[in-house]
Length: 139
Image 1 (spheres, rainbow, N blue to C red):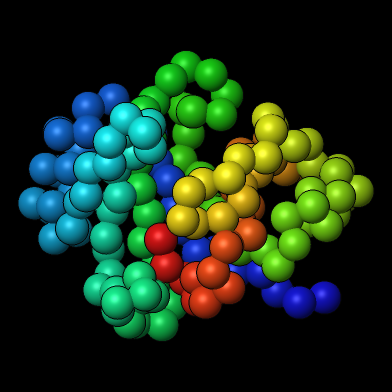
Image 2 (cartoon, rainbow, N blue to C red):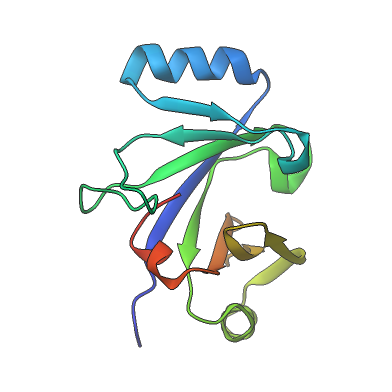
């Protein structure tokens, strides 16, 4: 079976300004605040990227912060795995004992996304990028 790489991380945040300042000051990350049309998502650039948003340093990934809520999907950090076919991967997750959490999302300019719960209760994401070059570990 082909290995599907981790391409993105996500962590919850209560205060985007505060978390942005923290990671910028502590680790030098580039932070980019998105608008309400993207749920006020905060992009975290941990590695330099090229003009296609591909990381320049192999083995590195970028990520982001979402608004923390007290529901199961929005209170813990998680990683995002790149997949070739989101529906085939959904079926594979379910067949392996995982549980799909919510509906498939189309993230504009990025790709199709599902959250799922693995057999240990971890919430994980999977993404079928619209641009196949995106799978080389970018955010």
